[in-house]
Image (cartoon, rainbow, N blue to C red):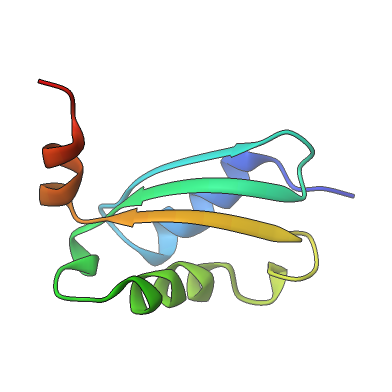
Length: 83
C-alpha cells in the first residue's frame, strides 16, 4: 500500500512550518520532493536532508521506499527562477 504524494507533502510542511513543498510520485512509494524552507539557511545538504527525513520519521523505509530531495532556502530558490 502506497502513500499519496500530498500526504507526504503535508507531513513535511507540518515538520517545517512555512516551507514551500512539492512532492511527486509515479507509484506512491518512490517520491521526489522539492522543499524550500528558511530553516535550511546555513545548513549543508546532508543536514537539510536529515531535517526533511525527520519530518517523515518511520515512514521512510516503509511506506516511503525512496525519496529524492531538493532542499533550498528561499534565497536559493529565487536565484534559480528563470529571469
